Amino acid sequence: MIFLQQLINSLSLGSIYALIALGYTMVYGIVLLINFAHGDILMVGAYAAFFVLGAVGAGPAGMLAAFVVSMIICAVFGISIERLAYRPLRSAPRLNSLITAIAVSLILENGARVLPFIGPNPRQFPRPVVHNIKFAPNLSISNIQITVIILSALLMVVLNLLVNYTKRGKAMRAVSFDNGAASLMGISVNGIISFTFGLGSILAAAGGVLYASAYPQVNPLMGMMPGLKAFVAAVLGGIGSIPGAMLGGFMLGIAETMTKAFISSQYSDAISFSILIIVLMIKPTGILGKKTRIKV
Image 1: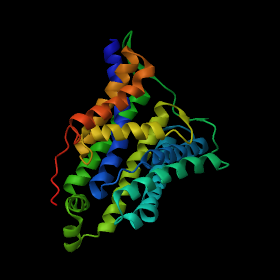
Image 2: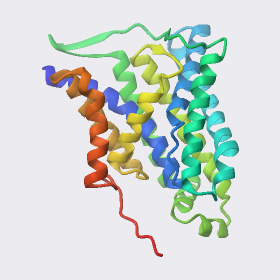
Image 3: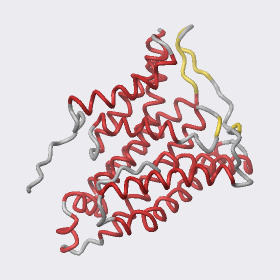
């Protein structure tokens, strides 16, 4: 029963990691950029939801409003960051964009800390009343966990449908494969890249609201660790692969939760980042990643 309980907890945590990892993998697939500011977009979404729920309450209508507002705000943040910080460096060496991503992350974190209506201190995140559904004495699932798992799965299905069966999704895959050829075919490469950043930020916003609901506290640095672990999940599954990001998120959630349950909570972060090192040493392309050849 303990194992089954931890498996339920793993699915809840892995769903959040998978949502955040999808943003990493989509951006990398389009522009070959590791957007380390992505975790801090999660923080922006969580704070947007915090203020909405504080104003309208944590009922079903309030949660829906929190999701919508946080997604819109994060999409604007993601598109603005791409337009102002990354687009001017698109033809520069990749290291320049990487350093810029780290700088944007620090700006978001420390900018939130000095804003008078946010501040550096943690705050309690308003969430619905927790109800546990018991299946056995040591086996239960909460309404928060059910919401996290169902909404995450729904968003992943919608993303897959969008990427594989819509005109915009086909344009995204074309730009990912060869942006020069896509441009010659009449596809707006800049528009597609901005759309990808916006879409990834929407998923990060959803992840932020779900993460804050599951672990009800918000602070300006809350996106740092989930963002790094989602990056590990993206690398584990195969960065650039959408199914790989989902698989990596769930696998990392299982590894971290089982470590906390059966070994020690002090080793959970070490296990997560050890997975990153092992994957990069043994199979750098990840589980579902594909090898690419570069012609010289």
